[in-house]
Length: 364
Ligand code: HEC
Image (cartoon, rainbow, N blue to C red; front, side):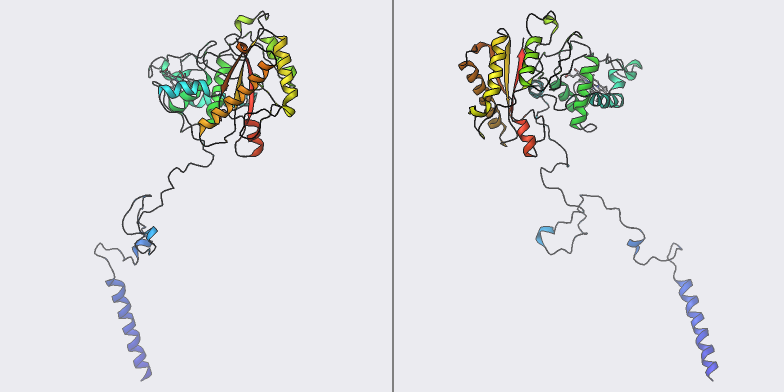
């Protein structure tokens, strides 16, 4: 009796199994897919509102159905430094006057620049910078209107601007090269092709400021202010037999030890006396040399015009002091750069202190 039932049951089970296996076919003959999303997830593009993915949110702030959140307006990538000059003829001129290479020149920097040049520039500008790169030689690109050679009258700020935005037939390289890399390239071009000498402090390169002759010797600063002032004053003295071949400006020396009150342009004389005396002595000794005093601030105010005013007023205060000590006013010009030419990071107090400075440059 029992066996009979078991037999029937097992027959039933076999029939059920056969039915379930054979009947479960899709129209296309393939086995069915339960929860097909798990086999084939939908291709969801970022930043697209499909109108379904976030439908269940109750929080009003999240009820739009975007697949990814947009970043907050004004967000920039970590480490990215915005570039403050417009892609216009005016921006080009301004950058040309104001921008100084913030990367100190070293052999390593020039070597990095050379490597980058070989990757991004050589096919147009050529191995020797004469604008005869491979694509020009293959007639794929017209001959370049610019040759990198001693005497080329393009300031480093203009070069940086051009690498950033492009110019004429040259495209922008801002997406391939970060700012530091672009400045390294400027160093490489100027030292390798323009044959510019490099001093330890970066020299201020205004318009036309190009060391046009390889007879320009390298000035090696010692770090001792009186000594360094003598170096640039002697070198740029009209008595120098190479005077005509010298660039229009000497490298700059930072007047370390001139102090101002916070956000003020009143010199703290008690602390600054020694430095100012050195400057007076040097100017008195080289009575023909003309100088430029350049004021720089840290990124103290968001409003750059405030920084520029402060830096100019500070340079002016130094000038007034020198005039009071008997130096002819006509020998000293003054310029304020605000925070546009940092030599260190503006992120920490130590860097900021370095950026707040007055520089002296001999000008021809
Ligand atoms: C596709 C060819 C091409 C490439 C690649 C190229 N350049 Fe140029 N470059 C040019 C042309 C063309 C000019 C002349 C632009 C003009 O004045 O109309 C130029 C001009 C310049 C100038 C002169 C700027 C000025 O203000 O007049 C500099 C500096 C320069 N290039 C640097 C570079 C560097 C650095 C690279 C590599 C990162 C590079 N170029 C890559 C074609 C190129």
